[in-house]
Length: 456
Image 1 (tube, rainbow, N blue to C red):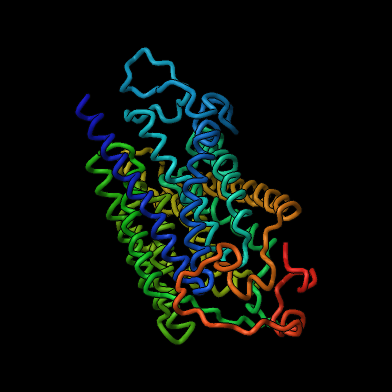
Image 2: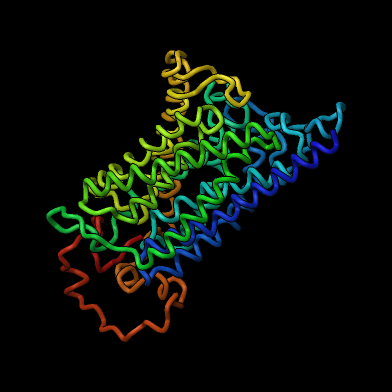
């Protein structure tokens, strides 16, 4: 028993470190897809967000998510892991307050750290979607609220023994708990922020705003793909050879299939195999397989990946036509494919394929029972997270403001928010923008406020 606990603990901590390493991937992808004048801002947000999430989740989020309570919220062990371990490793006479994780034998702090890195990932997703116009302090405050309140409440519903878990919803590694939560929160922020200056013309046309470094974005995507081999298999929270081997292969297969389908779809729609679409295709496949990776066959993961790659390209184009400005495609990757991946459990699940009794999905003779449970989870989580996030963004907008001034946005957030630049040797003296440009430019900002007043 002791040897198993040691091996399981090593497995959980190593995979948690891989998930932590994904923060580097997000930083590189987002900064690569952004303009050079905003690179420092993107990098700084991605660095500080994990620190903020760590403290918010430690202070209250962990207890709300995994503490024993009612079907909607944890009520015990709320602050700073203030409850004893209830792992089987501590013996039969335990009196723990985190029953939802009593099934894994690793120590309490190993459980906490593994769940912490997932909370940080959810908050990081928001960063890219609101890039190039969000106030730095407002993003920090929102991230703190998200990791301490929004993410843990949803997590309790699904992973903490809450009402969706009792309903029979399954989300193995977080297509909903992590990815669509981050996506819904990002959507609320985008809608209140409005698009970047110059993104859409007065007649509604979309103006391409290329990222400054696709090499960086490509490297970041490789880092994320690598980190996902901790994200999904690590969610076993035990070194189960059969399960983790299965999950690694379904994860990789979905990613590979999505890369190819996204490339082909962009080639067909845009006339060229767009690298940005290819990169987001890989991420879309990874997001889509995150919920069903332990519940579906390798063949099913291939189909899930192919669909995800098509969906992400169509979603990027669709959001752009709706004038929902998402600089990095976070909504298309994390929200759209988080939803699809969650529903894929209800379609493709095969009961007990890695030892988990899920029942069969619709395509394997299980009827609609599992699919309806998954759909209930998607709708309820979407409604809660979107409305809660909208409220927090609105409070921030009314108090500290959420959008930088127009002048700062045009000149770049690196200088305005941080006082330095990612590429200082490339800076040249620029003429001051005239009031004519600020007040009479052809491209709108997407706000009813006067351009000369800036944006809150």
